[in-house]
Length: 417
Image (cartoon, rainbow, N blue to C red; front, side):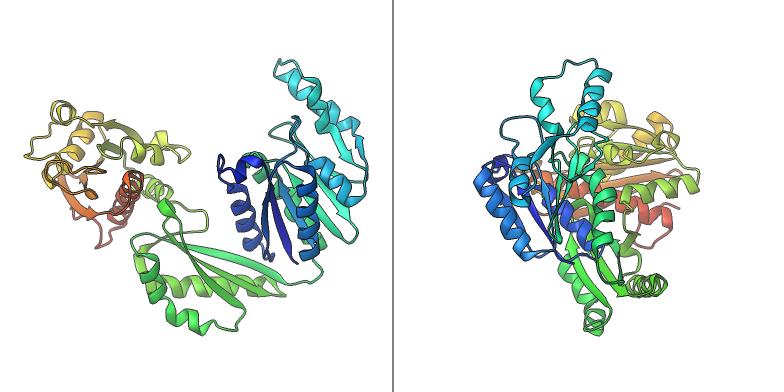
């Protein structure tokens, strides 16, 4: 089944907002076995939206749109879909009532233009809005369908994962089961990982399993396996086999599968060992602590953190005595100091040069990561590339990965005894 995507909004064309929705829709479609070979962006212009929808329908069995379902004058996706589908807009009393109830519950006065969101193409199915006011729409167009989703990402995600996938699956004519599994790694570049996996890539040519690589910033480099068969158990078996093979080749560079994150793996290891963690950060400026507390229940194992950006804070608060704040001595002392300060079993620290200028004679991208536990501490130097934000982000992920490796007993982690 072929699915096209049309993102609607002049702000997307002007670059004022990055079109993350199309990327998200594409990921979900691929993960659930739907082909998608066409994505379009179009501004808030009725004739151009109509033309984009007609083009998409000529190329695909289903079209998913995002944006243009709000209450303002430039939200004209409904009108364009009505024209393309030949279905006049009519007010849906139930949708109107739901919108009125949302405003009443928030104690807000509802503007008259919000009633525009209750206008629905005749015969369309309304997707209930659980997180905002603009409902989604499922609009048949002959044997094909247009699915209209809000532009707000978290509203779109909710509908996409539930009603939209159910609609697409119901329309798929074949009985093939298609599933994907994502192996997540940290510490290898995309080209190196692809080289290691090259024999398997070649072996899978023409088989029921495909393989793809994706570099994803702080999420590492991903290896996605997609398998197809008429039996779900067979698909699961194929994916299990490929995951096992990947782990044999990549070893502990693999940190998780599918939605697992570095911080989640660190959290699980800390819980399993009944350990608490604290962070001391310089160049990462709180990013490390922020990633850790994204994990639900972090209060049970994360004690706290110190952003010791200034030298005086490192010295006065954490007891750092070192010739340079960008040094192994500073990284170790920071980890020891924060663990002592907040009473944690483990201290994790970052210090380095995010740029764009050198610091104390050290070039941009030099980062020292420290860790303390059991009365011992160690530090590791890494050289990172990129702009200031990329260096800070990668330093955060590398610190998490070193913590993961150390807690798992890997030889690539710190030797803390």
